[in-house]
Length: 304
Image 1 (tube, rainbow, N blue to C red):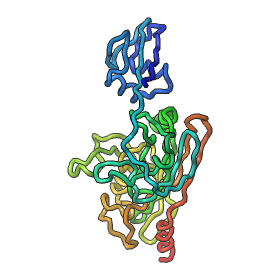
Image 2 (image 1 turned 30 degrees about the vertical axis):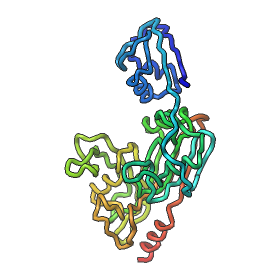
Image 3 (image 1 turned 90 degrees about the vertical axis):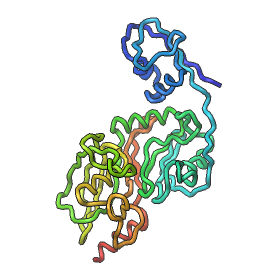
């Protein structure tokens, strides 16, 4: 069953159609509105219009929201540590080695399959399918905190918070070499590598990428860092640390991957998240301790 919403423009707003709908309907994100426009599910005075159409007084905007389809993704009983859960969001501590979303090469056995099992019917349908609202991601071989939205309203709000850089994300990383500065900021744009399309790289024509780091402890030939990112580019921390000559230990893509600890996957952990609850507005601070293997490596470093 479709949901029909109707908006009557009361003034000569003279602004873009998608921008006007965003201000009038807080339950829809700009991305969702643009998708509905492309699909012909938004009409102005009974006709299909482009995003750029400027609304006028007396315009009647009809928004048809199609029924959410059931996803083809299967629920799977995969053990996941739940750090926080309520009716609107769930925050999990993703283990290293677990892919976030099904894709070519990883059709199942992912975090999404696990969330489908945990949330049952309480899922976001913002993508046109009933599925978990993955609002941000971390790499397969990075562990730590991830927020999942259970409904569209929470999904839209969390996506906006991330876009506006209002979600404070902090990571813990062990990198190769001794970093002399106690703290610093890396501001280098990142784009898809022109040499290897599977990799990302610092590129003057890329998107803005800002990484702040602070030294927690220096070891014999390694440095333990607390890292905060303002932007969420693909592989951002790994690319930035490699670019300044201090790749993350165990990173097989942006360093030679070799390390005397024989860890598989990068020693990078999404330790904490600070944000406003998408529905109540309450300030949230959540933390996940570093994994056991990470602690064991740090003990080895301490004993050298």
